[in-house]
Image 1 (tube, one colour):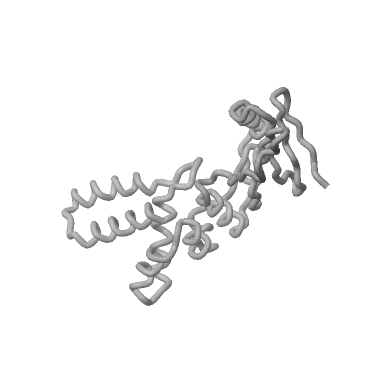
Image 2: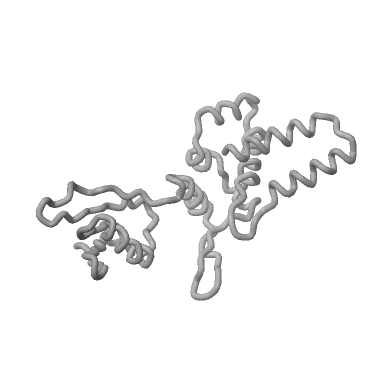
Length: 198
């Protein structure tokens, strides 16, 4: 939202300044570099600019963009103003590594929008809470992942829990969801185990 806002106003001001041809060419080169689409990540300057331009075009009230700016966050901005038409225009999709190749795995507008929204929620990091006070006898630390449709990477979880256990000094457990089912990862300092919960 912020990157697009800055780009939107910078572009508007520069267009209205009455630049000489060579000055405008310098600006156009610089601007093109800022909004250049990336092959590997979403360029927030480009997406934000397109969203602000779309809002300004769609709403007759010129104050609408200021209202949106004052009342939205990155997440709600994406949820409320990233349209199917913009997703198609910007050629957005979700991709992941399948085997040894990167492949497009999602082209559905709502899933793409939700994926972008999730990447802005909590900086894209999972939210994990201490589930309960440590058991006074075992001293085990019980953690709970606030699952909101995005699974933890199971292999990364299994590599990370031993470090948490080492810091805590006692057993650690983490409850989350995997393949649509509740699962419990435990680490006693020697090994990490996983057990699906019923």
